[in-house]
Image (cartoon, rainbow, N blue to C red; front, side):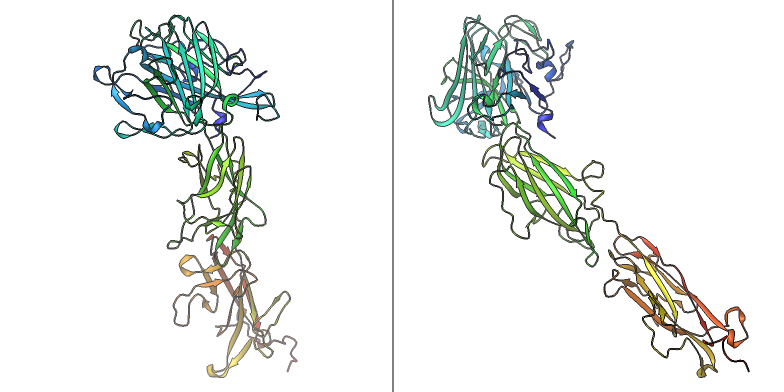
Length: 621
């Protein structure tokens, strides 16, 4: 699925201020309920008005995250409380968590949420390093609510490129990547002052160790923005309805008391460039310091990296092509890998899901990469003869990286025994170089999907049989000549061994009229090859059944011949005049295509042989 098609679409703006203005895609207004035409949290998570009691359950889709962080254990404990002294400047691998009651209550997160948008209409060169033409920015809106409002709010919001999660024994899994973003938001109780700080994880050398501050904004009041509007945050100054279940320490259920609901927005593209995230975490801190001890957290998936793969079968001189001898089909397939997410993806690999070794009567399914072209960085070089998929579980490398909006085209050639070959592929990539390849997609060609090419990649196979029958003394006429004729052959002779009874000798030629498969006459599969006087021709001299296989037309073995004589019971029409006596017999044949098993019936042929070949022109006595 194309991620850009479901993550808020593409909002088109009239100027570069995207986070907090009338034409922004989201209502950053200090309440979670949609008031106008733009999105707000209730419609983002499919919670329409009027809000029911009990409240509905938020539904997060692609590019969205909703994390419930209620106390679910006895004694008011929850599973996601910090253990020990953990700080934002620390490595994730050193963080620890435990099941505990979060204190004080003002630092207890109850829910956290995020929503990403591709926002178009930004002028070329709006920030250093941005495209020269009109382009899109990644804008993320996010927020949290808290259990109690009796105290200052010191919140942080992490956006991780790696898949960060909870591991065993109170440990975290995942690690920081260069370009991770931390937004710290501080509201002094009563709204006397507010601050928003944006940090980028740089690993080392930042003004706070591994963190580098890249933006700062301050104000007096419940709303704070940077001067260029690349980041804004706001809290509710009066009680407001919650779209989801919420129980405050003080007040009425499902109502956010003032300074209990927080939301913010950040222009990621403007501040850190092209990047996509995999995880999202809201946190609280013991104070407004950048190195303060962390108190509570709500951690969830936030998959903004995306890849889309589409596979189609191509029809040209190379595809589909049948090999009638080996009974296989060659097809060409085009695989298009699109990065439809918000940032570059890395370590792109492709797997063919259908290749398999031969088994029993099933032929091998062999596919190979023939070429790789497109926007990828470090695309693999394909050797002469292609790169063969060894099996249907192995991924082959395609490119080291693929920028957002970029695509790579992989051309594949396959040889199988299937017609059509319904093939599928899977692609995987990582959000970071060397990271877990959790960005995935698959596609299978289908005749139900327009443009997948299965119709034109189905090889039409012909079936056909042709019969010729000659009296042995008849050389035939072009184009139907008797290949068995020899000068001096007799069509009818009087056999002294049988008291000079007539013997009629005929030649039968059975041939294939199709060049794309063998033709088979099998008595156990509907095959027929009979002559009205010679009898069953699908048996040997001992009467045992035989199978006749004709090679494709134009190749050696495409013809089967019979040259035999028989003793007729009487001339045609019981003719008594030797000069007018003739003997006729008819041959029939039915067979099937070796590959498609379709039936072919030859036109019956009759040979009429004269007892006296030169009569009735013989001189009379």
